[in-house]
Figure 1 (cartoon, helix red, strand yellow):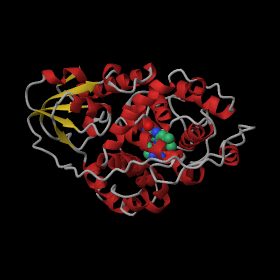
Figure 2 (cartoon, protein in one colour; figure 1 turned 90 degrees about the vertical axis):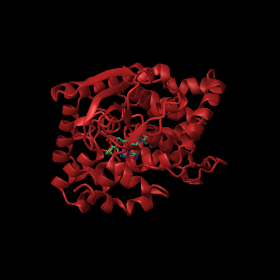
Figure 3 (cartoon, helix red, strand yellow; figure 1 turned 180 degrees about the vertical axis):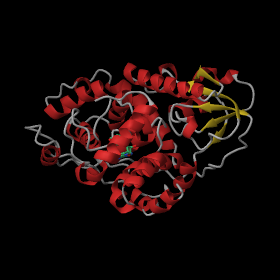
Figure 4 (cartoon, helix red, strand yellow; figure 1 turned 90 degrees about the horizontal axis):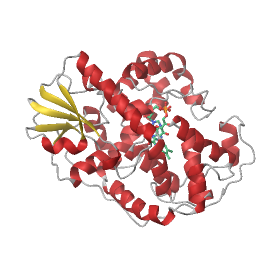
Length: 379
Ligand SMILES: Cc1cc2nc3c(=O)[nH]c(=O)nc-3n(C[C@H](O)[C@H](O)[C@H](O)COP(=O)(O)OP(=O)(O)OC[C@H]3O[C@@H](n4cnc5c(N)ncnc54)[C@H](O)[C@@H]3O)c2cc1C
């Protein structure tokens, strides 16, 4: 698998997928044919999660090829991400609590053999051990495999979901506070209370094209239970006065020239890099390198457009003393840094998020009803 860190390559991947594989997406998307045969899904998540390409342009390209009804499944999947983001924005304490719990559990499990076996891929569950290698080598796993992996981690290996979510964040190129944390909570049965996802041998065999045998799993475990409930926190996602300020761009919005704000006038653009010193979850070297290459690619495009920019570390934001405004980094490590350091910034929210997040108060099945309405705002 190859994830070249550039917008040009991302567009090439998108165009190729739309041309050759989109028509079969809803039929084939659940199959994991292995890392050498990944054409049945788009593999765009490392780019979408960094804003190198955005949901809107992906959906528009798909609609230029096929009708909404033929594309519905793909569009729904693309907007799952937007939904998870909005869901977490309305309940940011889910993320904060996750990090607090993780900190505690990490210490407890640091030396436990079953945890070490899991992250070293030495569990004797053949498929799981191979997925560990694949995750570390390719920094990507198929969606169905992420579900099986998380389910085996929680219900067969009996490890805390918080540690599994950390392991994913450390190695995935698309690691994202919302999709990842809520994906793990969903598998555990605490996202939709009482409904968990139990992987089973039959399902894994079928959707991996019989690549694995002898998969002995706990197929009867009850869902995990969490006492915590998270009422919605009212938020204001409206944009402040934009022009003539310094703009900060974090790692989630790395395509300024295609953003909603491309035509606004900013004094200077600061691209913010966040290495491991200021993260609660320390990322693998490969993931840090991937982010840094994506940043370099964005810088090259700013240079090509003669836009004044500077690359700075997140710890240097405090040194910019003139009016700052930032493309909203969303709930996660970068926003945590701003909050922890009492850096109160004005934010700019994408139109897609402003419009969609109002529908994230309930479940995805409710959100789905609004997808046609969301898509009409793209015109
Ligand atoms: C436990 C678990 C952890 C996950 N962690 C992450 C994560 O950290 N970052 C991340 O981007 N996705 C995460 N996902 C969601 C999903 O697995 C990936 O987005 C998807 O596998 C990416 O592959 P693709 O680009 O080929 O997807 P495609 O099937 O081609 O879908 C197109 C796009 O839609 C979005 N998408 C598709 N499925 C989902 C989904 N279930 N949830 C949210 N967005 C989706 C992605 O942006 C994806 O690129 C997780 C899922 C699970 C079950």
